[in-house]
Length: 538
Image 1 (cartoon, rainbow, N blue to C red):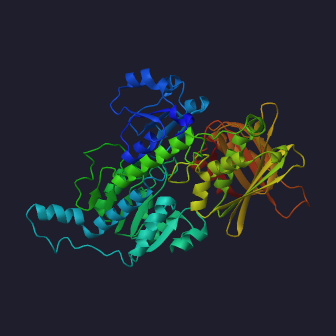
Image 2 (cartoon, helix red, strand yellow):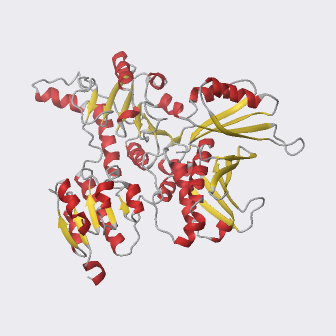
Image 3 (spheres, rainbow, N blue to C red):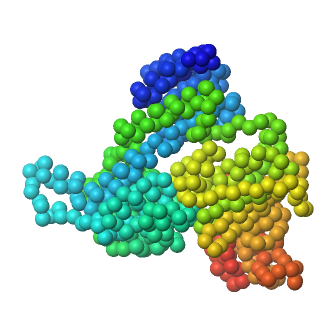
């Protein structure tokens, strides 16, 4: 041991794998305080340089403000909801988690539920142990030759698909942020949209994030698009399913069975579906394997060791440190880069390659932080895993999405430009932005092939593409006004006669509140309009 590490004290506040504790003890003075009260934590946290927790310990602002020597928080698990990451970042405390610890466990549990559902295993066990022999009644169905529909084709969805292929299943999946190459490698078919998956699936498994767009995704309308007799599996997030609609579909026979590991409210013991003979339920066991829990503890311990010994903290969830000199130049472009990623993702149908161009003085700096910000905006709310500045490149790699950046110190018309292009198949989407003024306000300069200038520091953006004829801007304004949506700012991009081949114009507006999708659809489907998007910029 070196003098550097001998002086560091680490608190293990919750039970983790013994291997992880031993790893820490080899290098630091370790205290195990798994039975501490909050009062004791508040009193003693100031004496520690590192802390390991699971989900029970709350490291809120009050605790962190007393952590005068704390350098790293290790969360042995995926989420960091019990850590005030913003306060930690302000105090220069690294917050690291173990995002990959439970992926295999979750995938295996999904497959276990598919098998249990197909072969009536829980029902057969209950029947036999209650003194009945109901062999003919409990006959099941084979997986071989059946179609597994996968909604959300990230890390866990891909692992499920690999296992399903081993059972002889056809796999069809939809995730616009996974490259074609990943589908080919796994032997899965890439659907053009979610409806194609719904229509094809004999078994439908959900691996989606919980966002306003995905909440209640499985409802009466989407179930109606499924095959009669479909079986639905959810090991992702409870709110993805409208319970009442699933119950009605089970009652009608439209859905032949369901397997649920997650619920809208947890813990729960009186769910209306618990009494259904064709429903298999487990109490959120997706990540609950001894190996996953041990892996989480060991991975987190490794991150704490790295943070306290000058190593690379590969799973940090807060902003990695960069030099003050670089931050002075690049800092104002971080929110712009993230917004451009979000906007481009909303306009793209699929993504296989991300191309980022930095022009102007920012090109003289190490622009990797801006690239990470672009990827964070690109994936935010679109992957089952949470995305941050550290894991964004991994998410891109796992989905077969290549990332390239180029730098040019000269920029035309503006001091600095960020130009982002998303390529998917034969289609590409480009957005361009910059910051302006002493406050470095973010501005969108190009989208959907048209140039304009719109300040985008409001939380909501709407874009419309339409035939370049008189009166169209007024129609958008009237429709938004009728819906009670207040426009903060607006800009129009159009080509002067003879400048180009396109006869389409683009209108971009920022609004105080989100434009309802129904309003977007109503405008986009009206005469002369081609498309519309409502985008939350966070």
